[in-house]
Length: 297
Image (cartoon, rainbow, N blue to C red; front, side, top):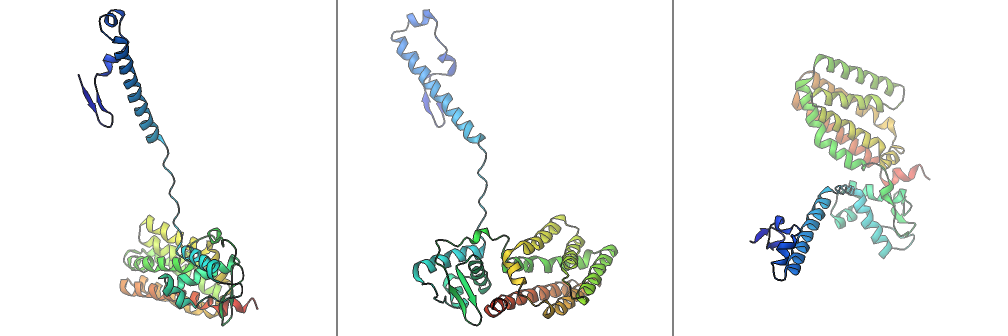
């Protein structure tokens, strides 16, 4: 009797025939010893293959590899270009040219150049650009914590205008009071010339809480924390003249609050879009060659 088992071909006998034969059956079967030897060999092969398959299925899955951040991927390409074609002291092409070469945005190029400057391969000079100061084998930008600040603000631009619009339709009276309190704290901190990071963070998280969606609250909070953890953000922030931006950002938050508290979804979304655009512009201003080199001169 033949039995077909997928993946193992045809086996001439069922497993029950593979039991050790009695002396009588062996004696009455010509060539019985070699027949049963073949049967036992096939059975052992079958069982070993089954065990191998079970062992493979029981193995823990390999954890996924974290994808390269956009600026990190470009930084590696620029580092390779420097090692292959540039001398110490040589100036790199302008950001616009690099953006065209690598097919990415100027903010991504800005992040990549800053990461390479922080890792010791490049130096950013005022009104001049980025220069090679080391041709080390590889600038370890992977060690830089957090997402790139422009990468982060792009994610916020995709999400937070919709959060503001939803908040304008769903916010309770309690939420409106909490937003007003956060805004009042922001005004007080700005008036004292202090950073308003805590109240600003709280304002945006309260807006997310107004949607009634815990996943959105978690996303909003994680984007803020990713921003503050970013080494590149910290480097840019250290060169920002906050007095130039506080009044603009305060007006942005007031406009968002007004739209949400009056239930105007369109204005809430537009106000948030404008606010995030203002932050992006401030980051671009503070991270240009002149600003980054000014405090190091």
